[in-house]
Length: 360
Ligand code: NAP
Ligand code: GDD
Image (cartoon, rainbow, N blue to C red; front, top):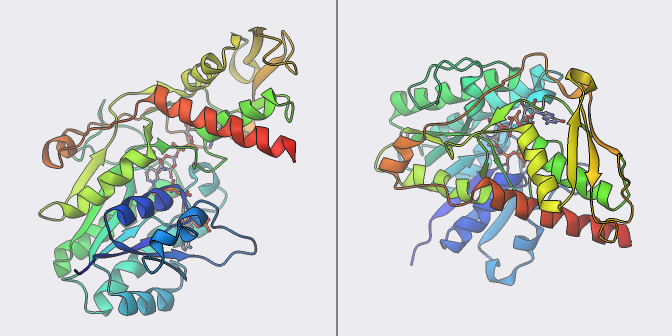
């Protein structure tokens, strides 16, 4: 039996790790590109590498989206059936500080990959998935954003992803390449990077509960997002490449919540009552009720969440919510995990992680 071969860039990231697990279960041979770093960057995939079931099915290679030689060499050697381009400088806030680097990796990186496929003579064989983003909508032009909504990127990150979106379409139309964009709205998990807001909240509150930190500092509490689960969404990335033709799809839960709501739900899960006071940069949450036996290190009236201007962006995307009708209709998909299940999984994992690290 001939197994399909997939190549994943960004395999060491949140989505790459879930997609690798998903494809291996589907009997793919999975190759991943990891970049050179001075310390280990494979913690999200070590469990796959160490799993004997996946001996000779899971391979990691050094490479970098900015090193086109590495991409051409790997693609010509592997001859993948599918490539998922997940690699990126993916932090919107950081992209204002690293605009040039972000643009290189996210824009030219995608082009390097597409052109490597073309140069290897695989334009008609290898399907290409581009990790596009709801950040493309930025200053929203429609209440719910669909594939037809006009883009208005508001950060170097979003602008770099706009190039990647269009260059993928361009290679589709110019060379009949099967190149598709998944326009994914925010998706989170216990594997989310620690500086993205949901993970920052679940990990930050866990550390406070265990006495390792005293306060969680956040930026814009009123920002609205459509949050799904990464494990759910990688299945969609795969479905996008199984569709009968290359196309672009919005993937979203179609539900929207504020950062403040996310914080409140985490406290609710922990069974700690808080009260918000103040306005703007002076807004804060203090603890009004909790079980001292359960949380001996907390104190009543303790200011547990404060606002810091350091976490505001020069240009904020305030309001995102997707319209995923096309994906539901054509790919027969709907999200399986709601925000409360997501919060439970993230809180449980971070509480356990913090408990263990506290024992060391
Ligand atoms: P992530 O956790 O930040 O992972 C990014 C991955 O890219 C990491 O494996 C990183 O390697 C790798 N990478 C960065 N620069 C690279 C380079 N120059 N060459 C090769 N690899 C490089 O991101 P994610 O949340 O999994 O998101 C996956 C993709 O979907 C990204 O392109 C992101 O922009 C996009 N996206 C994400 C969301 C979301 O809500 N998560 C929504 C829409 C679109 P290291 O581990 O070494 O840092
Ligand atoms: N990171 C962060 N840290 N964000 C905060 C904070 C904070 O302390 N306080 C408030 N926020 C707000 C941000 O200003 C933003 O409006 C919202 O919380 C979500 O921020 P992030 O979790 O950093 O995600 P993002 O929406 O900017 O970007 C993510 O989703 C995009 C899809 O819409 C990233 O994964 C991007 O790569 C992805 O394309």
